[in-house]
Length: 185
Length: 92
Image (cartoon, rainbow over the protein chains, first blue to last red):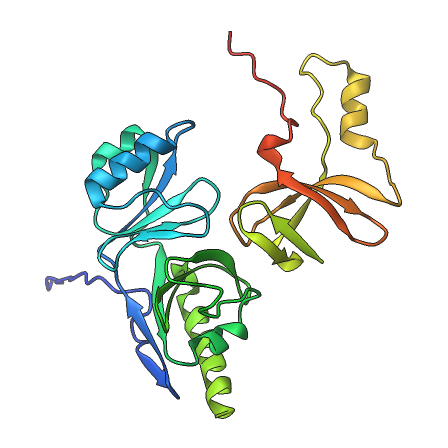
């Protein structure tokens, strides 16, 4: 019997779908090395924030805020939780919080361009214009019917995250909105 | 209708899910009659009503909302965790 050789290759959530440029808006995929959900234990918010600062150089984010930078970001991810995006979480954090590895669980895309907010205005029920939704701001909200995390990562750039299983739908909805905005000129 | 989530701010009602009347939970050793009333008997007011909503498409928090059932005016919102609805667990 012939021997079958199998090779497993990692596939990113938006593989084969991105990048995409329509008009002056581009949509690209980000593939962070690791994503970890951090849920502080009761009364441990302060020691956790200190430990996070010592290990990764950013404090635990307040609601609707993200801390850190492009390499290592802590994004507020809902009531009493944050997502560490980039580095593998320091095991020392486990003394103060429940850590859950979500590295393969979320699709991460970057929407960039002068009309990025106009694209998003067709999909989400909140105001993402730069004078309202500033650098360091983040929001948990609905994108079409998907629960999304949206973070401003540049003057004209937004990071959008949805469950990995919604990656295809996310790209489809964003593409349609990008086409509609571009068609208006 | 918009609900002002104490964490996220004012959001469209599409982000929220109705979870029922906000009732204090009876003590675990309450009698059958009290539990029956808690589970089955509801006021149906035309006016202000205390209820639970979850910000399911947002931060996930459960909220205690005071809503006018006639006008849908939202009169007060607080996190359910602060609303004193849960029975204190006896861990002794």
